[in-house]
Length: 426
Ligand SMILES: Cc1cc2nc3c(=O)[nH]c(=O)nc-3n(C[C@H](O)[C@H](O)[C@H](O)COP(=O)(O)OP(=O)(O)OC[C@H]3O[C@@H](n4cnc5c(N)ncnc54)[C@H](O)[C@@H]3O)c2cc1C
Image (cartoon, rainbow, N blue to C red; front, side):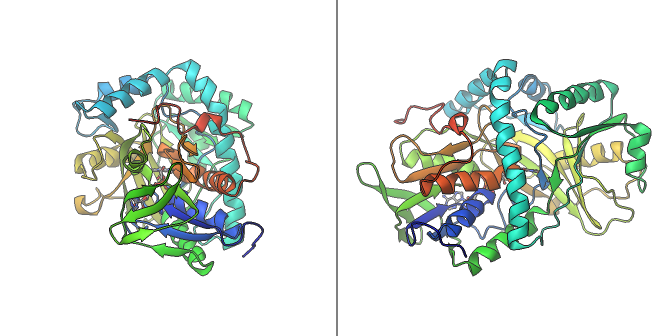
C-alpha cells in the first residue's frame, strides 16, 4: 500500500456503502488509519443489490421537469414505478417543496455540468480501481441502452442524446431492426433505443465484496454490526463517536450513512434534507438465451442488467419514509414491463419473499452532498446520490479523501455543499 502523507492520522468512516468503502480506499492509500463502522455487515445496504450501472449518461439530475407530476399521476396505483406517499411530516414537506422548486429547466441547466463532471471522473476512477484491486466484479464497458417503447419517448431520448454531446458523450441512435441485431437471442418489442457508449456496468455485490476484502488486507479495521447513536463534541470538533458497542475516537470523522444521513447530521445540529427513494430488484441465476446489453426501459422507468447467465430486473422510486417494507405488487409491475419490452425473455414472476429492497438517498435537487459542514472542523459528509451512487462513489471517495488529507480537489464541489438547504442550527 502506498503511504504518501499524514501517516497514522486516524479516521472513522461511518457507513460501509459504496461511498464509505471508496473513501476508505483512498484514505488508506494516503496512509491513514481507518476504522469503518457499519450497523450491518455491508452486504445488506443499498449499494449491494442495485443494477450496477456506471452512468455518465445520467447528467440530468433526478429533480427535473415533470418528475413531481409523474409521481402525483400514480398516487393511487399499486404497480406504478413512481410513488409518493402523502405524509404530514415537516421535513418531508420541506423536502417536497424544495424538490418541486429545483425541478425547473433553469436549475437543471445549472446543475447538470457539475453532475456530469462527477460522473465522468468516477467512471475513469472505476477503471483505475479495477486495475488496482483486480476486476472480480464483472465490469463490462459496452454502454447502456435507453429502450423506448413509444415513438414519443424515443424522440424525447433522442433530444437527451443530442444534449449529451456537450458533455462529450458518445451515443448511437438505434432503430428497431438495428436494436434487434444487438440482441439476437431475445425477441424485442421496442420502437428504438439510444446506446450511451461511455456507460459501463458492474456486479455491485461482487464489487462491494472485492472492496471489503481488499480493504481488510490493506489494514482497514471493520467495526460491523455496530450502530452509531451520537457524538461527543468539543467547541468545533467531534471528539468521540458513540455507538451501541462503545465509543470510538479518531482525528477525523467521515459520515456516509446513505439515506440515514439526516439522522446522524441532526446529532451534529446540521440540517440535511434527504428522503429515501425505495427501489426493488430480483436476480435470476440461470437464464437461457440471456440478453447482452444492460438497459433502462424509459417509458416504464425500470431497468435490466445481464451478467453472463444471470439477469437482474429492478426499479421503482417510492417515497414512503425510511422503511424497507416490500411491495410485491410493484415488483409485479416491473416484471410485466420487462416482458412488454422483451416478450422473448424466458423469465417467471419473481417470488415475493426473494425481492431485494434498497433505499436510495435522494436530495431535493438530485445532487449529492459532499464536503464539510459549517460547524465541525474534523467532519465531512458524503452521500445523497439517489440513483447514481455506484456511478459516483469512486469520485466521491476521492474527493472526501482529498478534503481530509488537505490535498487539491479533483473538481470544484461548490454545487454539492452540505449547507445549501440548511441553517446549521435546528
Ligand atoms: C433498485 C435500485 C437500483 C439502483 N441502481 C443503481 C445503478 O444502476 N447505478 C447507480 O449508480 N446507482 C444505483 N442505485 C443507487 C445506489 O444503490 C445508491 O445511490 C448507493 O448505493 C448509495 O450508497 P451509499 O454508500 O450512500 O449508501 P448505502 O449503500 O445505503 O450505505 C450506507 C451504509 O450506512 C450504514 N448506516 C446507516 N446508518 C448507520 C448508523 N447510524 N450507524 C452505522 N451504520 C449506519 C448502513 O448500514 C449502510 O451500510 C440503485 C438503487 C436502487 C434502490
